[in-house]
Length: 343
Ligand code: ASP
Image 1 (spheres, protein in one colour):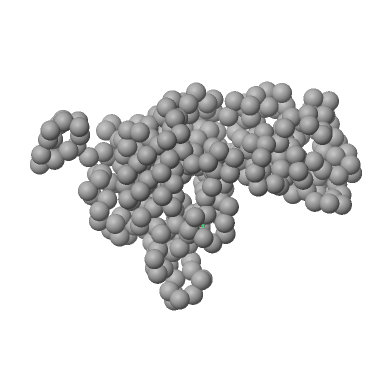
Image 2 (cartoon, protein in one colour):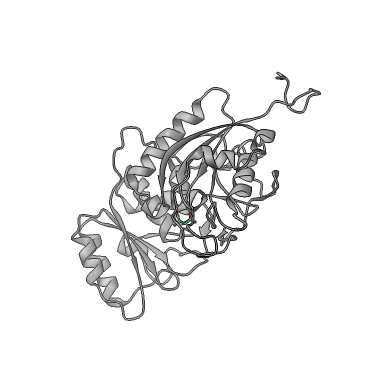
């Protein structure tokens, strides 16, 4: 029986939210030859198998699924991001669509979810989830992660929170979250901010007030964009030379993110390389290899004088994407700094 009343009204069968599952692969769709071995292959099962594995989804939402791609997320790239973001834009406009879940590998979930946050403008929840253990594992984490992600995508509380990662009973903003463990099921943390909420067996609690805040962030349209500017990341270390920086400067890259030591620092020799790269027109963003904390503008490096951008709280993986997206609009370091400031 269907009911036209809102779910809070007295109704024999409360109206269920419509949630779309856009599947991209990853370990949540992975299978093992032997459940007692660590090895497995990601991106093997289709979206209908993921849905069929959790019949309880029907209790909390009307679920539809689509296989957008089926890859391990280490193979995600600019073309895949553009394809996914365009499809999400179409899906969120579908009449009656309440929210979308994206199943995704965990390796680059912090990147894809942030790209979607930067480019897809919608108040409807777009919720990324995945798994650390393949679908065939003893105590696979994918089914509960999927169930919780559907609950978050269908919830009114998650509206206007922007793009979300729901994983291991926590709800994170795509803006804050990083993969911080290689194998454990509690792999995701919002290192500088903490989670924005929890989801326990479908019960959603968003305790970090986010109402509307994500909608105020400047989005960059990908209409008519068919490729993203090339941006590289270089990891700094004691005794670093400038060879890799020079190679990037000569490669045609439009931007370089440095995973600097400490507060985005780098050896004097490497700094000279960055200066020359900047003189060739490349945009240089100083970030950090440190797991938590901000990279502050004009701290030990004079960004004003050098024409560099400080990544603030964005670690290299997200700083690279923000730079790629900002470069679609401008190559001015001071304008690009504004993207980092306002995101
Ligand atoms: N390598 C896998 C992937 O990112 C890992 C995972 O999904 O947990 O697709």
